[in-house]
Image 1 (cartoon, helix red, strand yellow):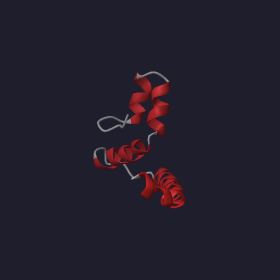
Image 2: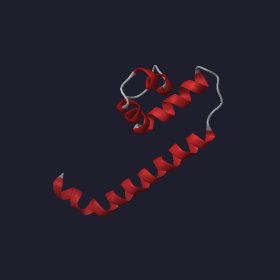
Image 3: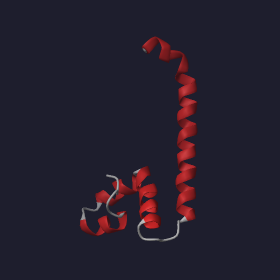
Length: 79
């Protein structure tokens, strides 16, 4: 549920209460909403939200890399 052609804020008014939670949990929704606001509507970038998404993405990448390093010896046997 990525907001390519719509904003997450407009969706909250028209769909069941669980859908905005799903849209908010989607990591791409924040980036796509920022691109839509800057590129189409000419609004300024929300640096606080951008920093939060960047920080969470970096933490997820670090956790995935650490998990891969720990499981790396077993990959040769499986593949």
